[in-house]
Image (tube, rainbow over all chains, first blue to last red; front, top):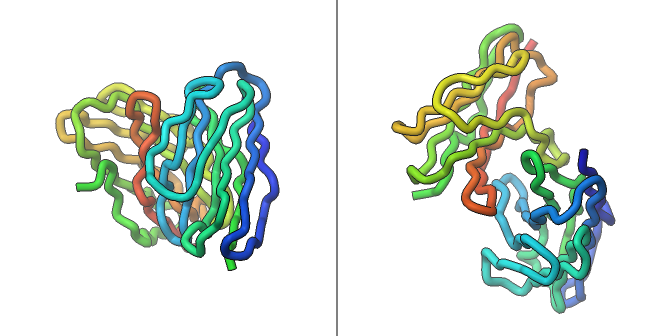
Amino acid sequence: SQTIHQWPATLVQPVGSPLSLECTVEGTSNPNLYWYRQAAGRGLQLLFYSVGIGQISSEVPQNLSASRPQDRQFILSSKKLLLSDSGFYLCASAQYGYTFGSGTRLTVV
Amino acid sequence: QKEVEQNSGPLSVPEGAIASLNCTYSDRVSQSFFWYRQYSGKSPELIMSIYSNGDKEDGRFTAQLNKASQYVSLLIRDSQPSDSATYLCAKGNTDKLIFGTGTRLQVFP
């Protein structure tokens, strides 16, 4: 079965600072990978997904970007964080169903 | 119209009762449907998937799908306080999983 690693678990960043969140997957190869964001008390919003190395699809225009430099690595980045970027960021991998990592809770102050 | 709609709740049921969670979706193309459970502050975990019309049972959980009515539901029998969580309905759409905003379930002793 697949395991998804996300770090850090919590992050507090000032407005205008850069961001890099990393997700790595074990136990599978060539998975579809996803970044979701969940604002406080809200549902899961799909931000980006990737069906292969270097292939990124963006769902919501914003100041975030994603990259997939390796088969089992998915990175979410921002050059300058906004207050509205605060939320719970989840990486997911699709093999037999969608499995989520433990998430990163980002607070932009 | 949202792609996946759920009543936000809370749905309150006594311990031992059947909890019924409902979800509607907006298209006739989606072929796969999922129920996730999310405890407060945690990432979602897959409970069940369903692909065909009818019922699918797994332990205390039964998923029901009606594609003609664009309706999917989750029944939880013998509800326990540990079932108190937010339940997310999702539909598979090509390479993506689209979530509803979730229904909060409260099971009281």
